[in-house]
Length: 272
Image 1 (spheres, one colour):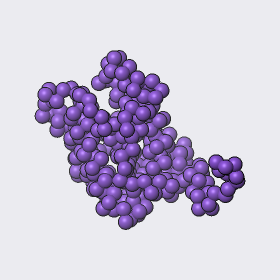
Image 2 (cartoon, rainbow, N blue to C red; image 1 turned 90 degrees about the vertical axis):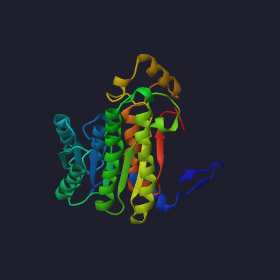
Image 3 (cartoon, rainbow, N blue to C red; image 1 turned 60 degrees about the vertical axis):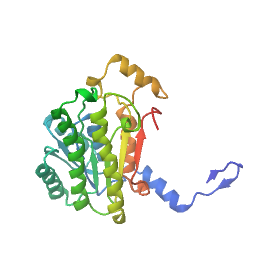
């Protein structure tokens, strides 16, 4: 029972009660298998741990940091979930196909995909060279697209697909053109794929954080730019990984079944 605005007691419908209770369950992702690409990076690492805590088995993809990926596996296994590492280059289509094959060979299924790899170039558009452009679009656009393609081919019905974008696609600022442009494509892939496979109960969403206090953020920024971004948030601070991961985790649950085709900005009020 809850109290409404008139002070009267009213009963929550039983189906809603059931959903809320399930969400509060310690392991709502039991008997699911998840693939986190970029799983050795700060966002991917903490997301993989969170999914493991919720009961999912994990395939932790990494490109070069084998030691960190192995540490993620160790952390996931502390929750009695099974986890493996998979090394691959997400800019190589053969490698992407191999990631999925390894994950399915290990777990026999795929229920969740979270795409987190990222690289940054911050400079005026007039100074971006071809190599920088190709790298940004190969990682953020080509890599994401073909990871989505394989998910569409192999994911179980009622699965969850999540991409990471950036709040920069929703604001007008300088020096991030090639990064924001590469990420903007992801948001369109999300909408199209959500429509194409929605009849299978699979949701596809993008989470677009604002500036987050990580090793990914700081190399491109100055003390002055950081103070500026802090001033735009409601709490005068950068975001934290712990602000983003709970949103990703929720979107992996059954309770998020009616959220699809969306770009969800998680940025402390920096931009809508």
